[in-house]
Image 1: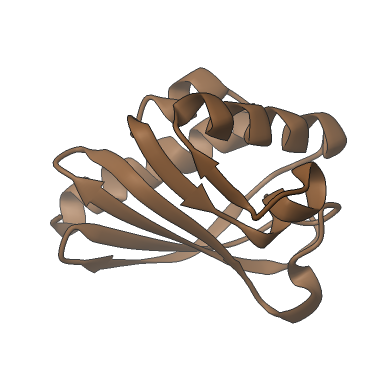
Image 2: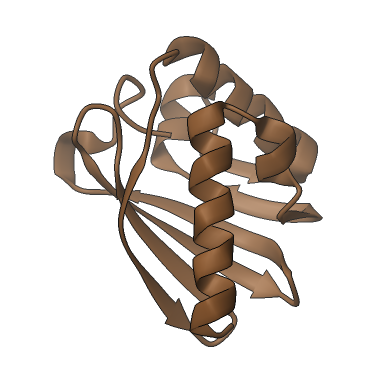
Amino acid sequence: MDHENARTFVDSWVTAWNAHDLDALLSHFADDVTFRSPVAAQLLGGDGVMRGKDALRAYWAEGLRRIPDLRFEVVGSYVGVDCLVINYRNQKGGLVNEVLIFDGPLVTEGYGTYLGEDANPAGAH
């Protein structure tokens, strides 16, 4: 991934999140995506691993239902080989990193990572 593609992706990602537009957001993810988040385990139970786009949609829809004022502000983004890290603040001011692994233009694997106590359903995704 180059820096121009990363910037385009991040702009689209944060716009979709702040609009609460799951269809736009999920258009960047492969059908067989795997996403891991400690917040998912708190919201939905289980191991915090969503397997497939439908499971990811259900998780994020529940998060938006519980956090109607959800909003993200991108602090920075970091480009690697076939990966991207988006560092952002959520609506509570908590710092979060989303680590995304790509196969071509689509995310095939993702990780929500949180700083300390910011990994709670009222303040993260």
